[in-house]
Length: 179
Image (cartoon, rainbow, N blue to C red):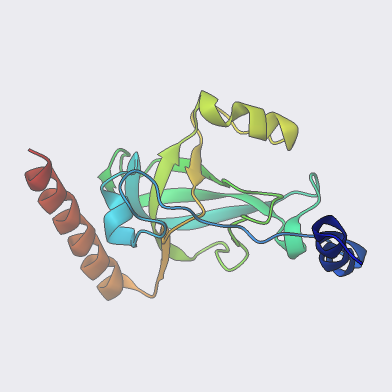
């Protein structure tokens, strides 16, 4: 007769025997109660909010990219600094989960792509992960978080103006409700 431990082990054996054992990224709601904020909701809690144009993609081989997602970071020219950054500046924006199952797929964001971004400034709370993953993220760099819509690809000037107005309104409304 099999006991509970034996049954659990039998259930896990096929999973352990699979050629690539990996677990999916799981997003858990934070104190604000959102597990997956929209870009407009993310605008309220982000250090930098902008519309920019990708100027460069940087590919990394170390650590081994997850499922071929090998763009470690992109460089972004700020076209419209809505909050926290100046127009004309260039930012280095890292995939905050590079090398893990929580990786942000930056491959579709190649040079010339116009994008709206809600970013977090790199800080000491990420140092241990970055050192473990051998990532050279600098103090002035920004992170594109993984659990939420922190990026939106834009298809031209008209959409750029519309999304910029939408994000400005979200920030204005958020300030008003926080008072």
